[in-house]
Every structure is written in structure tokens, then in C-alpha cells.
Image: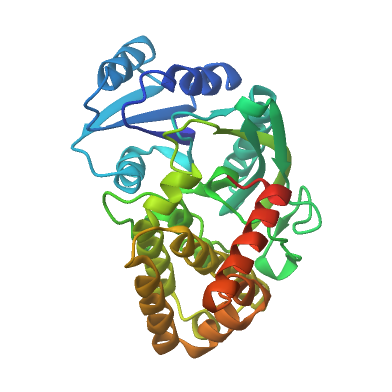
Amino acid sequence: MQKTITFGIPCYNSSEYMDHCIKSILEGSGYADDVQIVIVDDGSTKDDTLQKALDWQARYPGIIQAVHQENGGHGIAVLKALEYAEGSYFKIVDSDDWVDGDALRVLLERLRMFVDYETRVDLVVTNYVYEHVSEGKQKVVDYGFALPKGKIITWKSIGHFNMAQNLLMHALCYRTEVLRDGGLPMPAHTFYVDNIYAYVPLPRCQTLYYLDVDLYRYFIGRDDQSVNEDLLVSRVDQQLRVTRVMMHAYHLYDDIDTRELRDYMIGHFTLMMAACSIFSKLSKDPQAEPRLEELWEELRQYDRRMYRRARHGLVGTAMNFTGEGGKKATIIIYRVAQKLVKFN
């Protein structure tokens, strides 16, 4: 049977929580034959992740495929899942996250319609929910006002995205060939590559569709989670690496013809540079801020218009006040924004 969608689940020492993720897709889809789940064991060393993946494959051989690879990091696991994908559409679900069953059923109904009627929709956007488990709170990220609901559109029809509405990996369901055509420049052994996944393919998407359902449930709260602030600060070098890949993907003002898409992408890129700035300032590594300034200078040399927009716009200015007093002011602004947006 032709698969409608492939869910890729990158796993690394995920034995404790991967079952919940897998069950949510199976049960939400009604164990549908046109759904494929590719579980990628990324060289797990501390638990029985691989064996669990194989057990799931043995129970549902027509739906689940277990794949093992030597440890390469999240991005390489995403590429491995994409390599095995048989679905017309492709979505990544991290192993500690899950999907809502009712929302998944609505998504599948819509994707099947696109496939059956040979309607080209390159990107389907759905809402996601921050599940702050330790606080017992949820925060829904939707795309109201930024995207028309229930319509096939081009980038010319998008509206303004506020700071909390970036098109993150959790919101995206790509047509598989969009990802394969042109590839994904995912560096190995690097966190935060989901930003590359949610940025580089966008200009290849000719059409998109916003389905207003709360599909993806994004777990927040584990101490070892990559978006834990202490880890974000300690891994600022990886933030810089990912942002550099995004920088060199496009000269946005030259390569992106559609103004609306260009404005969205420069906004996303500006927030990445802002993240590099704040986590470099929070870092105790004496080389963090010099490396940050090297990145800013590289951006200035690479594309002066991108540099001016990222450095001297409102966000860039607020995250890069100079001197000790300016540094303290930047950190205060970040803390206020963090409480308002609850982005990690």
C-alpha cells in the first residue's frame, strides 16, 4: 500500500519514554496501513532502545520499521528516517514527545484527500503545545492571523508571524520529495538542528496549508532535555554552528523572491542570532563572546543587508547592548521575554 505519511522518530537512550510516542501515533491513526513509523536508534548505549524498536517492528511489521545507525546525532537520525520514508508526507516526532489522537485523525483525512486528488501541497502546518509537565501547564502555539485557515495558499498569502509563532519542526509536515530535493545540511553530533529542518526547505515549498488542530505535544521539563537553559548555555557552540549553516543557506534578499517569505525567514534567522547572543552572554566560557563576535563579523562579510536587519533591528539591538551594564540589561530583557513566551 502507498503510504500517506511517514513519521520519523529519532531515538537515543529513549527506552524510558519512546513507547508513549509510538503508541500515540498508532492509536491516533487507528493502526492505519497507510501510515509508516520509522524508529531510528541513534547508537544508544545506556538502555534497550534498539531492542524496543525491534519489538515494535515485530508487532506491527506493516507499519513500523526499526533502523539502527552508529551515533551521529539528531540531524543524522532525521536523515536516516527520511532515507527509509515511503510516505507522500514526512513528519518528525521526537521520542519524548507525542501526538494528539483526534488531531492526527483530522490530519490524516486531509493528507489522504491531497494524495487521492493529486493536489500538490508541499507543507502542512499544524499547532503544537508546550507541555510544561512539572508545572502542570500547557501553552498552545497556533498560527491564527499569520496563516489563513483551511486554504491552500502560496507564501504571498501569509501574514505577520509574531515572536512566538516561528514555524518550528513540531508544526511542520512536509511533502517528502520537498525534503529530498536539495537535501538537508544537517551537521553530525549537533543539537538544535531542528532549526535547519524548519528553515532551509521553506523556499522549495510552492504551496502550504494551515490545519488549525493541536497536533504535536512538546514535552518540557526534563533536566537532561536539550532546551534546558543550562544545557543551552553550555552548548552555545552548537547554537553558533546551526546558525552558521542557516546563514550560508541563502542570501535572503537575493535568493528569496517572495517578500512575505523573505520577511518571515529573516525574522527567524534574527531570533537565532539573538539566541546565540544571549547564551554567549550567559556562558562562563571566556571564548563564548569572542566566538559570537566572529559569527557577527562573518555575517557582515557574507551579507550586509542580513547583518543590518539581524544586528540593528529591535531584537538584535536588545540582545547586544555593550558593556557590563548593557550585558545586564540584555539578560533582564531576555528573562522578561522568557516568562512571557515560555519558550524553554
